[in-house]
Image (cartoon, rainbow, N blue to C red; front, top):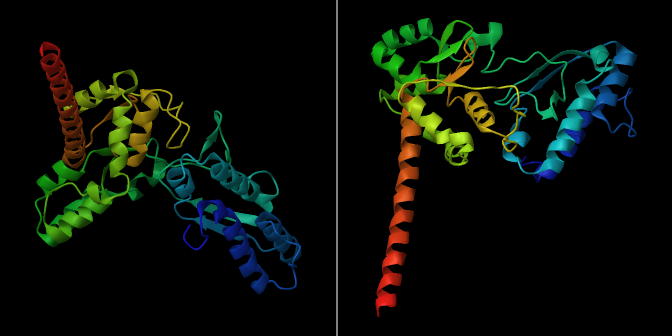
Length: 299
């Protein structure tokens, strides 16, 4: 977004930059009339027979960072749809690989790009052992860096993906290098997303959080989630987002959410305590106002 100047110019910047590179490589196949990236790749394939591999890292950055800017999101989704959707892209694209936190954005109830195979925190399928460190890998790291495996397991294990025990990779790297058992989530950009989501308190969401803090699990329906950061219709949508962000684990068989480990438990506990402190302050202010009113009335 930085070289583009603003979120509103991201799509135009990407088109101009990539088409410019393609013109340098295929000057005889593309002229100045080509303004569509999909058209550029289609023309190159038609003339040369070559196909493309398209890789987009953090594909969902506009969906997350520009959550309230629907115009930017719609333009971006239309851009992606133009590149990947339909029969023509199958001619000029050999592989498309998109990574990000959120699944492909839904338009109404359907995916805007339903020709992708998705691997998520709800169902990682055969990519499960590559989401984070596996237990075997963590054991080896603990031996190499002389860390206590049992403690690492308590703090950073808990994600169950397709039969694999998956550990938070960032936290494992941090504890191996620093030797400190603590939550490393505060260093991530998603930390501040927890509190307002819990404060929505859809259908007594806070009670569900407290139940999970006590070691329980709660039922969650994941199908209604629109794969963005603003469209929340019920507590299930909030819980589903927290699963995708890694703040909750998900039991695919039982369709339940749970707090996976001590790292996440400490984050939720801190958030809940902050909320209680705010409530106590608010209650104290109201009590003081009531006392002032009673004194002035008595006077």
